[in-house]
Image: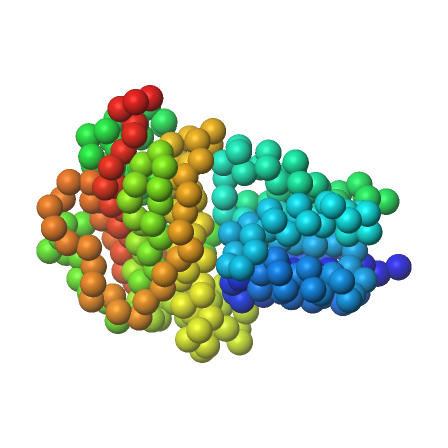
Length: 127
Length: 166
């Protein structure tokens, strides 16, 4: 079984960085799709089967928080493993991400092995 | 550290040592670097990119990172791979993300992780001529020597601080 991943970040450089880090994960990965904000991500989630969402918080049009809140309100989307990848370090932000269902919180800059561990844990947590 | 930060901010001037600690932490993952405090006269315009982020609450101010074109290529390459190296849009994006990461680290050190500061999206400009000037109050400048070669400039301006109410 392979997992389809959606990377959500308004920075093209950061999306590439996450993609490169995912390439060294042991977890079998299927399609890796990119979105530049929460709104675009929700459109993709409505059309494609996604197992894991890696999302930034501060983005134009729709933030990562709003996107996660919207996902949480849906039985289907709420079951998807989500990890927040952000430079935001405050305890308030970490708590808010948890409250909207994030299974992991990764602070930029991150190492590939940190992302790998978090991806494995997040996928395990949703079975 | 938070005591040092609070004192520095309430004095209206952030200690170069404090800023150095944050800058070194962010840049060390890319290449060996050293930092030095620089005066307004030493802060020279560079041919390259400048990323600026404004912050608000607890304090108000801005963080800026000035990166010469050659080093922006290195940043883009380290972050996004070889194909990003010669892509100006990705170079600017890499400078913006670096400014973003640096700003978050500066906020955490200045105000602690319990207090939340709102950060603007990074504004990246190819015009590095407009370096902040004026009186030194609240303005800290650092030069970052990376691999002993490229001089990156980092500046932090604290316009106002709520640290007195702590």
